[in-house]
Image (cartoon, rainbow, N blue to C red; front, side, top):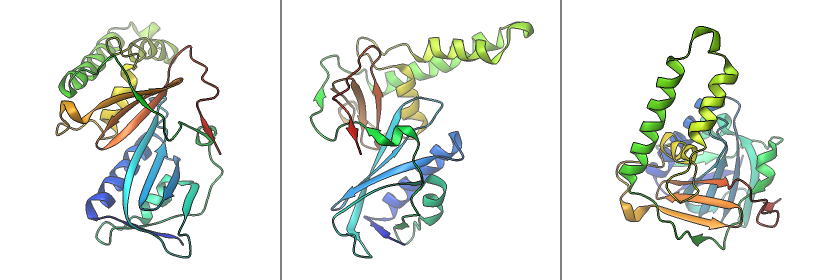
Length: 227
């Protein structure tokens, strides 16, 4: 088994936490791993949020077993989590799996540009998520029993979570995903967050990970990375 040597125990713990959160939303989650040199990117897609989550992991050195150039494979998130040894700061790469459709289309690696419409403060973003959660709970709990169907709950959810943050075009669900996956931590200050764009993609970047989403009405067929 290929062994990844992570930079330190903290990186291993953060990777394990990210994988655990993904598995909370999808027990059969898969993740795509891409690495070169001492940088590893872990891509996942929690179904509840319809966004692409990216966790960057620092490596202490490339890999064992002769893989010293690049790594690009889709694996089981659960098996990867089981292989993480926090005290040793290592993780084993499980056998490849047939990846879900999203794993074949990733955002471009480079070329991202800052969006002119700036983000609110981290506290304001967390408050927006809290207000959306409270509204969803209030509206769904207020439904009459005969109207409380899955279709109606989904409709209310889509209405609330598809709203955008100010003039940024970033849907509230993307911010909710960032918070739920541990990317929007209280320690993050205003200067730590960035909203980037490239073609049809919007990306919320924090020190702990990124969330990328396709903008509604933008095809952006050339702005993808397919492998």
